[in-house]
Amino acid sequence: MVQSASPSVSGMYRLFMQLCFPMRKQFANLLGRPLPYPVFIAGLALLIWHPTITASVLRKPYDTIWNLIHDVVIGIFILSALPVGVQHMKRRSCPLGDVTLLYFALCVISTLPLLIVPTLGVSYVRMLIVSLVTFLAVFLVSHRVTLNRPHRTFIGMMSAWGSWAVVSALRGLERVGTVYGSQSRLDIMGHTNSRAGYELLFFLLLIGFGIHLGRRYRFVVLSLSAILSVSLLTSYSRGAWLALCAGVLYIVAVTRGWRYMILTAVILLVVFTVLPGALGAKAREGVDPSYPTTVFRIGLWKQVIGFIGANPWGGCGYESLWFSAVSWLNPDEPVLVGRHAHNLYLHTWAELGILGLVALIWLMWSVIRFLRKKAYWESVGLNGIRIGVLSCLIALILHGMVDVTWRDYHQQVFFWSLLGWISGVMKGESR
Image 1 (cartoon, rainbow, N blue to C red):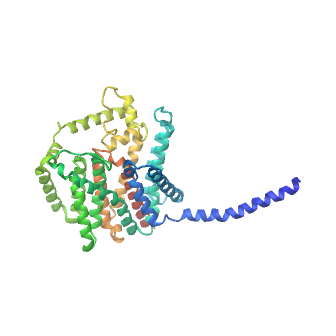
Image 2: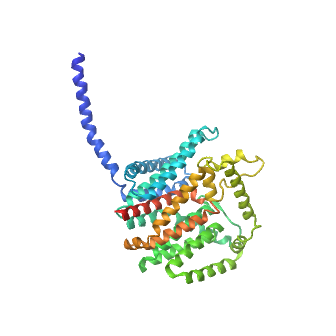
Image 3: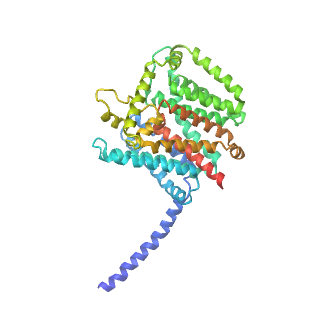
């Protein structure tokens, strides 16, 4: 009986392998292909919108369905990113990819000590790692989709990024009445500082994208720019105003020359000086070192610098600065109001250590180095976008000196998809 059973088992095994091998091969071929363009754009928009829709308090069972769709999209992005990541590790064909992988590796490693923190533990670390893997997957998938059609991909990504920015700006028009009245800082779209941080990046990209557009499209660009400008102005975010002015001045300098840039700077200075009501008061308070929010930021930076001084080489772990600072500082002293350092670089140093800060700065510098290759961008018809991306990066770096809106979920999806697009364009240059 034993001898007669063996051929039957082996035969079933061979049959099973014959059936599975073609499926395995088809699955591998499916993974090797880029994510379909419409699926990629729709998935990107959904990831950007997820925190806002979740904050709107969906009724059951819609909240469950919404979160399930979000998880499925993340799964699709991760599966599509796996072969891109493996290919990059084998060929090392994109320098920007190396720095990105280094940054995310440091972020993930920094979360591991949090496993033994009783108030955080496995569930918190799992949530952080899933978020980090999602951002990395967005970068890799954006890179892969961009390779063969950078211009079309950028247009689709602009629609995904802009869907949130434009709705946020339209809702921000309600703040126009606060110029002479009370200021509303928070709603389901988030804090106005965070919204301004996102809107200003899209606004600058939109200006750069519109530089070489035809006349029939310029009306749309100008209309959206006007809506975004009003929303940014009434956000009362001085950090966003400063970053926006820097980005606009850069665009004027490279398109019209340094004389026009100086003239624009003077005009902006006069405009912010004579702004009426609460807007003007906020602008003028920005240069007052004794203003409460200025004093608050300086005190906050001193707290974080002291925290870094206790452990300058290591870090307390990604997204754990507030929890760590609470136990480190005097319990009677207010700690990290807003739960972040109001400075991206101090915040990164405190959480990821000196290596994490170097990786972040290296990442920014790698992007700037490639964006400086004007001849290549002009040869592929993307010079206007290059200008927009550079102004966007200048604004982000400057805004990061006084705030940490870059860490917001939707802005991370925005940023890493943009870097994935740049990485795809870089790969095209090396062919």
